[in-house]
Amino acid sequence: YGYARRELDDLHCLDISTMHWHEITNAKGYPPDKRSGHQACAVQSSLVISGGKNSEMEFRDIHVIDLEADPPVWSNFYEGLPESRWNFACRSFMAMPKWRMFIFGGKSRANEGWGASQDEEFMNDVLIVDTESFKVVNVDVKGDPPPQRADMEMVFDAKHGQMVVFSGYGVEWMDDIYFLDISSMVGPTYSLKDIFPRMGPVTGGTTIDILGLDFPNSTDVTVRFEWEKTKAFMTVNGIFESQTKLTCTTPDLSTYRGSEVLSQGSCKVRVALDGDSFTLTTAEFYFHSVTDNSKSLLFGPGVLENVRDPENNVLASLEETMFVIQAKDAKGKNRTTGGDEFTVSIKMKVIEEGSDEITFRAVHGISIEDNEDGTYLVRYTAPEAGQYIVECKFEGTFGGPSGPLRGTPIMVIFDDFAPRANNQFTGKLMLSALKKEVDYLGLFTSSTLEGLSQPIEETDKRIEKGTWTEEREMHALAEVKALILQVHDAEEATETLLARCKSMITYMKKIGRNVGPMVGTLKQASADWKSIFEMLTPLEEKMKPLLKKNGVKIRAQITTYREALVEFKDEAELGHGYKEYAV
Image (cartoon, rainbow, N blue to C red):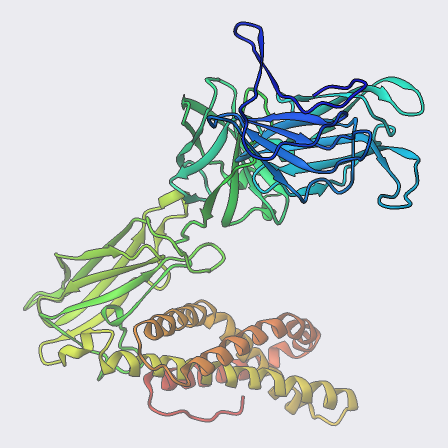
């Protein structure tokens, strides 16, 4: 091809090892029409011809010759460029994982076809060509573009991921230089393929292998962890191992400035070596939360307390039983991955004959199975009838706070004549015990909410109107104050029970047990408990001046109501029916 008085369609090759030219005459397929002003762009073992013009027509077509084939073979793509174009610039570049072509400027016409304007116009737009599908995309760029021009030179700066445009002719000859950053599109010449392991804690410290292709031997290795939603990222130094492997240690997310935007979940990993742009190819890494001992809990037949039903909540000795450790993070959310370390201790309470001295005998053969989903199944067998104390300690894996789990230690009763089915999740006892705990929560939270709400309304209205006697006012204040104290006293136990029942219901549903209306009851109890705490602070503020005025007079009444509430709570927990109190 050439730009002379006549257009050509010949094909020549320069052997750069010998600097010898020779003509290729045996190519097969359908070659491009004779032309000039086109672009010839090498893409791996192929040569791509695009655009151009001759004395009869202007071209927008794209032709490819496979130079690796013997003989070389032409193929053409009729879609081609958006419009006829000539005297433009075109360069190919590797945008992992495939090659692309970058087109800038040139000449075209405002209109094409019969009766079109004969006036040529200079261009300064940017096109990207996918060299696999040969689809062409017009790219929106930022910044001030070069003035419209043709006959310019353009090179690709692979080191910095940018196209460099120099000179050209528009209204006049130009001697300017423009840079266009395409690093986000191009990436370096190496690529990232995978990482292992693909998961680690938010506290960091996980060593990961980064696998890829063509990593250059370098001491300058940067690994970036990116969160797309928040646009946040953290970088760490990596180590070159080979052309296909890098290593690094994951960062501690808490060290990020504004770390509240970083949390558990997936992020993308990219790498950059020798100051290059980061790879376009990515791998996913999942940061999981870490376990908090004060939020994690136990549930199941093997830790079934007999508080609410001492006659029936008894397990069978000499029969294996089990319970589940539910690991939770600092926000009280269930952990969804495994790897935590727990220590479980189970001891039998022993009173020596003829002595009041109490000793404890350890139970052996305890097993802990990691379910890899944040739960751990613990199995053990009580060797004889008696009272057993179950303790569980989190060992602080992944940097989480260590110590005893929420609600522990737990006392469990075993008997030689208890039904064996009591020891299983599938037994009737497990379902009935869960129902009693959920019913207790429903009654306790609803009655407390009602007790706090009704006196406030009446006190506000009647005191303002002056229709209450001093005795009735003190009576109402004593009721409310006693309830407030009761809520504070029961806060930790109630929240632990709510969390345990929620975990138990989730697990029972998972193994196919019918939990029926318990789901709705527990949901309402949780909502009522939340409402109770939302009203406590404003309620206490309203009561301060009234209590200050009548404090000495109502202390005795508060004590009386508190005793009544404790009796009510005890009756409810023991399942002996519910007494009604004026609260």
